[in-house]
Each structure stands twice: as C-alpha cells, then as structure tokens.
Image (tube, rainbow, N blue to C red; front, side, top):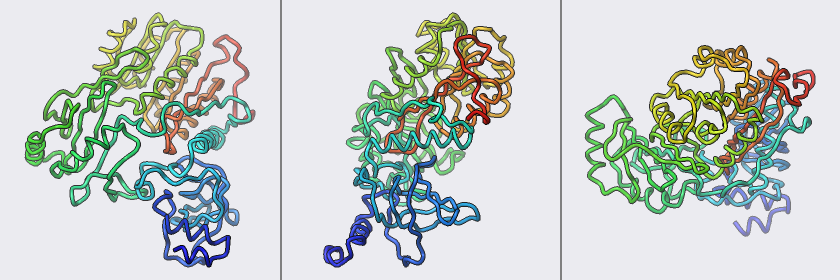
Length: 468
C-alpha cells in the first residue's frame, strides 16, 4: 500500500489511503467498479437520515458517508428520474473535521451515522438537518426567522445509552444490523451503552442459547433487565426450552430481571429512573428516553417553553410521566394520557408519588382531546412516537385550540410537519430547540413552542408559508 501511495499523484494518494482503511470510515467501502461507474460529487449540507445532499446534472443525490464540503467519488445504489442515492467509495477532498471512527465496527454497523465526524461537526450537521426539515416540509425558514436554537454538546459523546437491542446471527453471535440491510454484524464492542455492557453483559450474552433478539435496559440505579425474543413468539414450547437454558446461567451483576416475548422468566420487570430529583418507575417494555444526561436538559427546555400561565396542563403521549411528574407541581391541575396500559399504570403511580394534582388516563390522545372538558388556561405537551401526530389527533388538537402547545419530537421530519400544520391552523412558532439526545447518530430531538395569537402575551403574527 505504501508503494502505491508514493507512486500516485498527490490528488490520488489520499484516495488510495482511504480505500485501504475503509473500515475506519462509515460509508466508505472499497469498490470493484471502474471510475466510469462512479460519480465525482461535492457534498453540501446534511439532511435527515444522516446523508449529505449533492447534485449531478440537475438531479439531487443523497450520499451516505460524506461530510459537508467534501469532494467524493460516489457509487449509486438507487437512480430514479428526479433523485438518486449513493455511497462514498473514495474521499478526494476531506472535510478538516473528518476523523477516524472510534468504533471498529462503524463501517458495517448501521447503528451510527456520524462516527467519522468530530463532535462540533456533528452538531452543525444536526442543526442543518432540523433547519432543512422545517424549510422543506413545514415551509418555515427557522434559521432566517431566528427561532432555531441548538443543539449543544450536553453530556458525553459515548457511554450514554441505557438501552441496546441486539440480534443473533446463524452462529449465535450477538450483533447489530448492517447499514441498509437485515444482516447481523457480530460485535466485540459498542461505544454507545455504558461501560458495563462492554465489560460484563456482552461477553455473557455470547453464551446465551439461540434466541433471536435481546434488548438490554439499564436504569439510574445501575440495575438492568434483559428482554429476549424467540424467532416465533407463538411457539411456547421453544420459549420454555430457551428460558430453562437461560435461567440455568449465572446472571451478570446488576441484572434484576429476565423477560421472554413479554413473559417474565425471572426477577422483576420494573426499572427506576431519576430525573431532576423525581423518581420515575417504568416497565422494562415501556418507553423511556435512552440518554439520561440530555433528558435532564430536555425537561429544562420543555419547562422554559411552558410560559407564565400555570393553570391546567394536558400531557399527551405521557409515557410514564417524564414531563407531568417533573413539571406538573407548578400547575393547578394535570391530566396525563398514555395509551400503553403498562406505562399508564406506572404513570398513575409516578404522578401520585410526585405529589401532582390531577389524573392519569389510559386512552388514546385523540380520545382525551375530544372528551376532556376544555379549560381556557390550558397548556398542552405533546411527545408522540416517531410517526408524529395522527391526522385524527391533530384535528382534535386544532379543534380544542389550546393557547400554548409544546411539541416534542424525535424525528425532525414529522416534528416539522406537525408544527407546520399547527402554524397554518393559527399558532405562532415561537422557538425550535434542537437537542443532541443521540450523539454520533443522525437522530436529533426537537422541542417546538407554539402559541395562539388570541392567547395573550407578546406573540407575533403567525408564521405561514407566505411569510416564511
């Protein structure tokens, strides 16, 4: 390799070097194609999904493995009439903030998108992703309007994740899915979960009988529950056999429960999280934020978006009560709604333990919006799943017309869509805050603060497609 680099022209040496070390750069892989089968492109800004936008003869090309400003050679993986997709096979001119990926599995594993970018560049790309989503989907230029804030580096870049889901290959080795496929990449390490996963749990999981998938969850006390899945959840005989083999193994320190296909095998299934001095209990199968350090900041941002009116709080998609339990004490009355029955039971417990005045309801958000009597001093917090609000829930929210909405989203695209439709329905977008809840991935959390003109205060005119 060194001889090839020495003999190559200066502009080609870097390309030879990068191809030889492709495993260190996510999205950069060796190729057997000739140069006539690839395109040379200049990457522009990052877009949702972790790719960079480039252009070729008037066509948009979404490029995996590129960083903004780089000149890259790209192999197309999809070519449609109006757009194409591709992956980098050679970096001709690198972004100065490109780095060697710290994880040895980064090139193949689909879990991380930005390991090849330093932290500052990751943050700027995530800001660009949020701005692009609002500009393209909501037709609102949040950058030009000055309402976009963040993201900032809050918490560590690695070791933050309290949940990881592994698959097992045909040889029984645990791993993560390859980028863009259902193939399992066996792993020796993963830098995102806490140290105990790499040091204790991963070696133990290599000894497990042939389960199909395993999800490990940690809580704030360092306890963990392992959720196991068979290839066929309806096959009770197979589950019983695998369960007996697993229960015969000595569990790692701190593992307090085993669950197979939703059925307890051993121990307990409750996890305990502490956010801002509020203890929250959650079932091991229920949703909770995966990054505890940035979750503290998320609650702080939501609190800042609540405004001065603290009469009634309606917490929709409440989960186990992250926002209503941590912030509800300042309100006269709180109604928190969660459709998942297990999460709703813990929601009720958590609100009571936190001393919240109000009620927990186990029902769909749309039902609460339509059935609960409306109060004029009402503030609504939304934290829907990745798909965002359903059309029915969104229509019910518009008809209810609360004075203030705080919309939390883990997907900039659906978060922008919902915020844009609410703006068109009469709300003003006061602020969008981006949070780096998922470092080294393309995922980014957003909090949108929306108020109605007739809700009082100093709200400016509504942002619409015409004014954006």
